[in-house]
Length: 259
Image (cartoon, rainbow, N blue to C red; front, side):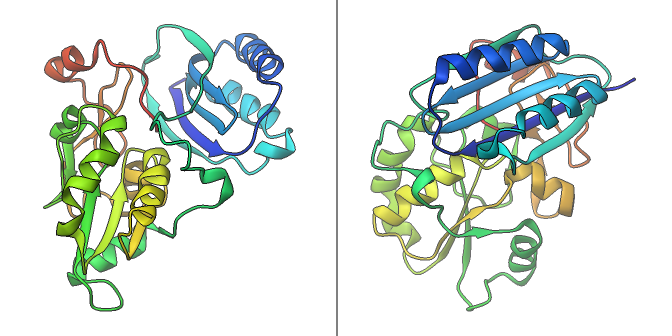
């Protein structure tokens, strides 16, 4: 049986984190799943893999918590287990930005779905006639594996550099519709909120990130593959893994990145 890989996150207020950590760890160990789960007061972020029935059973267990009942997971398959171990960690943030004022739990920035973004890129403008800019919020080596054609890339090396990069370059975004994107959506959540706070108008986040875009649209308007932080290293537009020794070496010391 193939291995089912899932990536999921949700910004939701969580409390009693040590008890939740222990419960999640026990549930995962009982199902022989591997990967990483990050827990914080602002929510949950997870990458997991295992036999499909076990993965689905864990998700059903997790969704029994009313706060996580609508947790959505992005799925892909591999022939081997891409994770070497299981970690369940408590963190200050499920994606570190170091800007406490940015609170996705208080409300999201507007999101554009994958089909709509493709339609805008096909047309060369949004529904209001404004030029569309795709803004890559990922790290530089992730961008090097693949990104949207003509995407804005500020060559950041970690997400905490995004706010300063935005403040340095926001004048180039004026008068345009800006769609922030990342692997699975988690960085877009905070990036879009920060841009709106900084006064950038017409800001959207790509709902579900690149992985959802691939699922809906395939390779349209995208060059290369989507980098992922596990042994697969990169997924093509069919969400199939492509192992690249160079990318593997560059990512070997990297922290867990969001979906």
